[in-house]
Length: 72
Image (cartoon, rainbow, N blue to C red; front, top):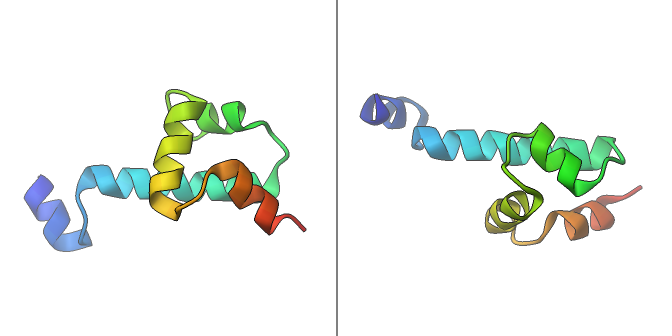
């Protein structure tokens, strides 16, 4: 499955799921005022720290800073 998925989509199934979760976090950061811990659980992360670490790896900055810099 993993080889076929990677050949079709271009990334591993795990990387695909992580990317989808990070995109969902970005959407929640922009469109809600929920605290980070609540967003983490809502988006399938085990904890806020796990979300923060994953988000930082994907975007280069922590979610709170990402939210602040894009606040309207």
